[in-house]
Length: 112
Figure 1 (cartoon, rainbow, N blue to C red):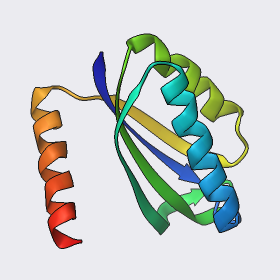
Figure 2 (cartoon, one colour):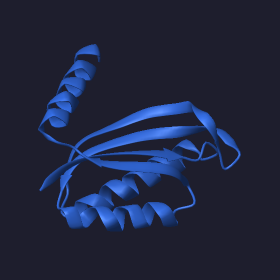
Figure 3 (cartoon, rainbow, N blue to C red):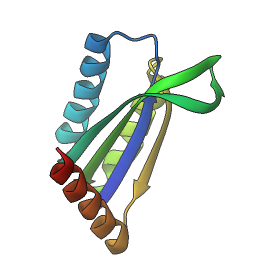
C-alpha cells in the first residue's frame, strides 16, 4: 500500500449539498478500491491563480490515503469524466512527505 495525497478543485457554482455529495462519492470510491482514508480536508472556496473554464475561484479539497497503486488510475479517470471537477493532482508521498503531512495534521488539530 502506497501513501497518496489528492487535491482537487470543484466548480464554484455547486451548492453545499452537491459539494458534500461529490466529496463523499470519491471517498467511497477510494474505499471500494481498497484504500484506507487517513485524512480529509476542506479548504473551502479559494481564488485561483488563473481562470479555469472561465471561473476565477473553486472549492478545494484534500484527501490523504493509503491505497494500492492500481486504485489511482480509475480514480483519475472518474475525475476526468466528472464535469464538477475543474482540476486534480494526485501525488505519491515518500517517507519525508508522510512525516510532513502528519506534522501538518497535528498542527491543524492543535489549532482546532
